[in-house]
Image (cartoon, rainbow, N blue to C red; front, side):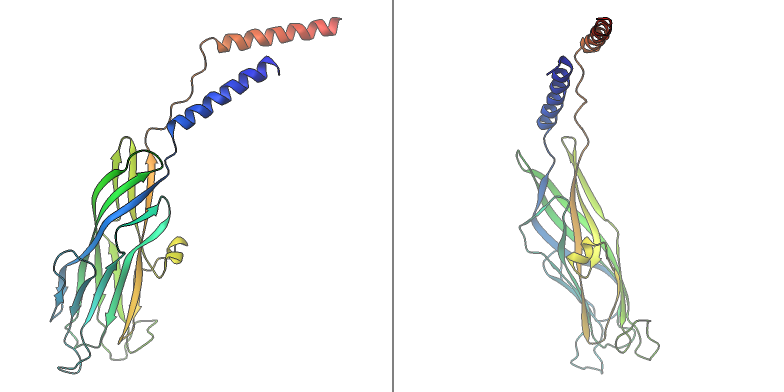
Length: 261
């Protein structure tokens, strides 16, 4: 091997060693607890809901039709994934299920909105090294509800006697904790019919629910890790530029001798 080949090989090895020393950023996240809470309902009558954080949590409203009937109240349920559970970095996963239970109730007794809170206690598990506590993350959603009158003037796309309309907006969609120059981020991607749909980017946080039926969406999330302190470039040895110039000059002189021989 020529001297040029040896120098190039040595530099490549130095770069590789520096990269290994810095380490990969692959990690997992563990949900030590995951609970939900309903809060701040607006409008409606005969409203009842779970108190504080729990799993699952319910909110119900409305006077059943006909007057005093046994059809039951309308409402929402959020059922979080059982904890503890671990998910790998950069994978889309379900945090829980949101279900709308749609009953026939008296007009004017349905709510117009309610907030949903989601609280998670998190631990990051690096590829190597000790676990990192990320503390508690809280996410908030506004759920708007339209209780449609069953008078034939139904929303487009209704599959029954005037489907009700549900619209969910994330008020807090991500939480990032920086530890040792590394950002650990849990992002709320949105509501989808399945994890496969969420992976494909198919989210539908606005949907219709049929009368006397139910409609379920999964809440999808994703855990990412970003290194804010990438490794510094490997410096060249102090005398290397002059050595390369000298070697190039020797090579040029040798080439002239060969031509003149």
